[in-house]
Length: 369
Ligand SMILES: Nc1ncnc2c1ncn2[C@@H]1O[C@H](COP(=O)(O)OP(=O)(O)OP(=O)(O)O)[C@@H](O)[C@H]1O
Image (cartoon, rainbow, N blue to C red):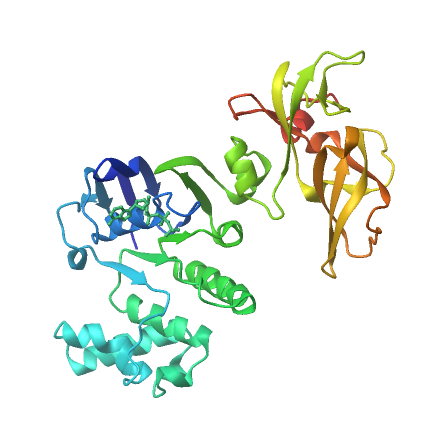
């Protein structure tokens, strides 16, 4: 495996810029997930790295070598596709060894490489089966085994799970993470699914409009989103975002919006602002020390078993709608009044330009004990 660097990578289609001066380094053995909404340039980035798409500007380096002029077959990268693209008429053994035989390796050499790969992936007992006789997870392992016999520099995944149902997607996520860690695969994984990004990535690279909006460890982005876009993209249900203003109050600055007046997050400057509060930061009941109170009326209740997601109207004339993610036992009635609380340290604040100006996690670090 090897490290990868994308330098000022750019792709234009006519007048539009799909990928706009992207700089990204992926360390040897690192699992990077490229995530973002449809059309943000994820696939184009991956395809330029793979050599399947020409670059308009910039370069691709693999293991410290500029490979920009090289065609896909000379870059030694393994692409894992959604369907895994196994040959249905061949056995697992033939599938895994196919590329080596094609490259002219001897029968004995191929058999040894296949056995080694199958051993590492714990599929040695499946070698004589056909793909249709395998589970989804086993097929995925065969697809990966077929790649690792060629000793690629890195693995590229383009939305490999988007066709699976929710349950299979869950187990496939675990499987890919395990394989990646076990084999130390340098990996670039493209998805629009923030759950895949949160659960699998060592580092999330969140793209929008052909550029990187923010990158970092998953919990870093979740706890310290750089702007409203990142705040709204990561987390489900999405963060509550309430437009208002930060102004002076009798006991320090307050955030005011539609009849609400809450202590402003520490360090947030006065002026127009958006307050961010994750649904999971809210809990039922009256506030204790260091907590804010929110009172509202229940509009909708979604009981999921382990948790209950509640939509409420708060503020003057119920002008603000809020989502709360409560324990499964919480059973408010529709139309009923409800008291919620949240730690002040869970409040995020974003300025008029959408950039984060302050947030709870930092307030906690700054606040006197
Ligand atoms: N061959 C092409 N010709 C013209 N425009 C293209 C071409 N390929 C991609 N684009 C445009 O470039 C932008 C980025 O596309 P890309 O496929 O990289 O996005 P994506 O983030 O992978 O989206 P999705 O999640 O929908 O696959 C989009 O606006 C898309 O319409």
